[in-house]
Every structure is written in C-alpha cells, then in structure tokens.
Length: 79
Image (cartoon, rainbow, N blue to C red):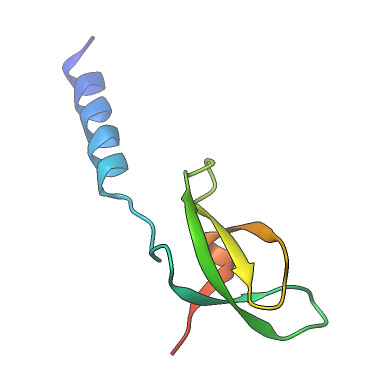
C-alpha cells in the first residue's frame, strides 16, 4: 500500500469512530408519519447501524402496537 492509501484508510476509520447517533434510546422525538398528518411523538426503542445513508432508529408511538424503522434525518428533537 502507498502512504496516500494508508492515510485515506486511517482517516476513514477515524471518521467512522467519531460518527454517533444523535438521539439515545428512551428519548422522545418528532416524526412525520405521512404527508397528510402532522408530526407525532415517538420513543426511540433501539439504535440501528448506518445503512450507508445515515443512522437508523427503531421507534414506537404511544398509541401504536408496533415499531417502525426510520432514518435519523427524518427525526426532530422535542423541545
């Protein structure tokens, strides 16, 4: 390997180590369920890995009997 490729590899590993989820398990966040509905509050139940397009979360609404998987970019902090 060349010095340049080693440097790029080290930088990629370092960037990957720095990236973390924005919201912790148990946090309440806002998520827009559909184009016709407003934003609703959901509780984060599990952190999921980056799928190449950003971190994902498993969330559950207070009135729902199921969980859904969403990308971090679709969530907003409450408050």
